[in-house]
Image 1 (tube, rainbow, N blue to C red):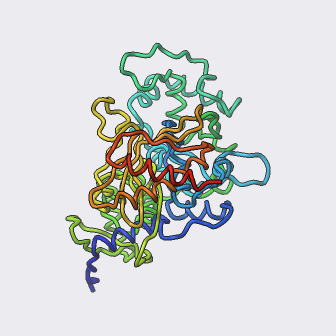
Image 2: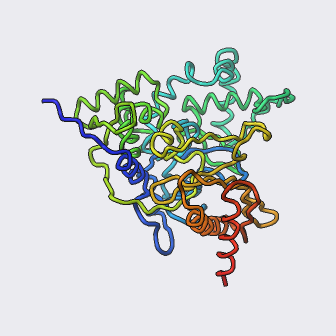
Image 3: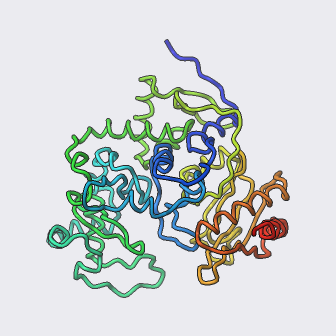
Length: 414
């Protein structure tokens, strides 16, 4: 018997999505501990990594957005390999781009590792095909001396060509291929530089010893994780979460619907079939307040962001400065269940200031209310980053009200 299709309003779909991402829960009162961090990781399943550090390393922000101030060293400890009985809880791999994911997911990603010779970037495949001896040399070096930096492979770095973003030498490329194929992994990062080691010295023994699931079984479980994290989503939303090939994503979603693990629903105005995780919460109200990293799992798929929030968002890091509309590193501001503003932020660590280089209000939002709430959140964020103050530059239609609100917050402080 075919299950009748539920219809969801856009507002309810948005609240379901926010609850699934951990924004229906109030921030902890008092000290944030590892239990809170694990709860958030259980909701979202993956933290994207990015090298840009003009404001804050992006993998730290999703926890702050949901929990408020916490010690970043706590996340580092869950990620770094340590000797003794302490179990590593997160490892780094290509999950949704470069990401931190729970170690228990490693078997679910082995199918991607096995496809490195097909799916890895062109330069990696070239080195693997043309220089198998180099791969063996680098692999042996990691096994003997790991953890090592890319510079320790002994292969020189070529001169940077005009317009070249990455200046990788063949030793680094070989390491990256071995990383993609799962033959080496990241022991930790030092000043954001990856240190490579063999999985046997990094990952828990029980994880390495676990059976490798079939490709279909692994992908189905990844879609389940994505469905829990999204609450309600289209098939492309679900496939994008762990960057599944589109044909595989379609097949796995169809299988889960057939098995009754996903419910087909219609969301008014979406224009595409949607799928509801059966246990997804349906809160009547969301009272969240958060700055969102451009790489937060709530908004990293821009089509979904626009569908959920009516918020057109493109990161402009790679856009020439003269052509940027909102700024270099712009964070959306979530208030209640809406994205109401966006701010271009820079941490001026030398001056000890969180600099708002531009502030922009979304249509229909109350400028004074948004400015007041945003000022409080910016001050909280500055304190978490070890910065003493917030400075608002006169750019954007919200800058004036935000500057007034920041001064009011400053005046209330002892």
